[in-house]
Image (cartoon, rainbow, N blue to C red; front, side):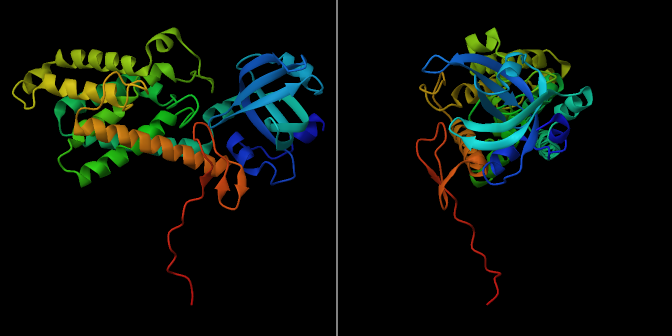
Amino acid sequence: MDDALADDLDLITITQLRQIANQSPQPYRIHVQVESRLEKTTSSGSPFYEVKLVDAGDSVLWRVFDNNPQFHDVAQLSRNAFVQIAGQWTDGKYGLEPRQTQMRALSDDETTTLLHGDPDLAARQKADHDEIIAFIASIRDPRLSKLCSMFLERHGERLRRTGAARKHHHARRGGLVEHVAQMMRCAAAVAGVYPNLNRDLMIAGVLFHDCGKLWENVYAESGFTMPYNLTAEMLGHIPLGLELVNKLWREMMDTPAAAEWSQLEPASETVRLHLLHLIAAHHGTHEFGSPVLPKTPEAVALHHVDNIDAKLEMFRRAYETGKELGPGIIEKFVPWPVNIVAPLPAVNLTHSE
């Protein structure tokens, strides 16, 4: 395949590629950024490269062995490079891989377009961000409302380019916005069913529960790579979140508005402690990294809301891109321990007699 022919192929995303690999015989091209290129050796000692390719919504590992015509070109790839890869894609022994491959660098215009992200994903994330703002505007407690607003004013841009995780759920640029918005919708629904829950605290707790990931899982300003940094590696997102909320709280309490809150009940210091507890306890167990176990109804609810959204996002991704082993049976995925089954559709009562 020559370069001119490659440029005429349909341009799709990595997620779309997963959905159609082995189902559609024609070749495709993808525009991606190189997150990493590792040189490794096979069990027989032959060299190969493991290249992680990323776009706005997904990532894929491309293993290039020494008998691949692209082997020497891949050896020249630099980290963070933007490239087009075209070929006949198959889901082989080592995952997705192109055959009859052509690779070239992206032009400046192509890179700019790629960085804008998939239009559908960008639209969904914008809608989620708008809903986060609306939920915060609904908070009645003036201290929690002000704290949330300060956070978005200071760190809103960083929030919009942070992933909720590196691997398992919402692991994409802007994924944390999706995760927080869905958790807020769920938390509001739960608070409606259990009116003794403090809805304001729940909404604020959702916003801040993973705020430390703005340093642990933040993407580069102009790219889809998620670099590691020493602070996040040594502390983790829960201690970072506690530190950030304490810092914002102290600044907030030094503002003139704080004098008006001195007679509010519950007292401001109690509100701060309850919010910090939601951050500290949201993983639910010591085993999964929480320094304390949930000790309030809101902490229990927040932990389960977080867990529900993470797990259901994993299922959504598996249904979207997983390998079907049989009718309605999809291959297990990390970290899920078993194969999963397609959900039962709702009954359709509109069918004709």
